[in-house]
Length: 69
Image (cartoon, rainbow, N blue to C red; front, side):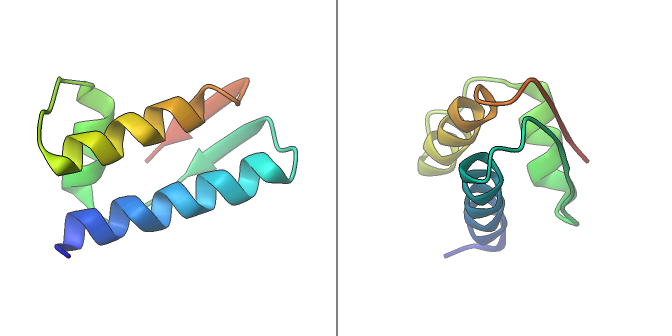
C-alpha cells in the first residue's frame, strides 16, 4: 500500500469515527499534501486511489460543515 493510500485509509477511519460519534462539524488534518490537494480539487480519478477518494467524499455528506487541511 502506498503512502497516499495509507493516509487516505487513516483519514477515512477518522471520518467514520467522528460521524459515528454524532459530530456534525469537523476539521480533518493530514500531513500528506498530495491527498489534501486531490480532495480539494475534486477531479475525476479512475484509479483505485480515486475510488478511496469517492468513499471519503460520501462520508463528508454526513457533516454540516467539514474542512480538510
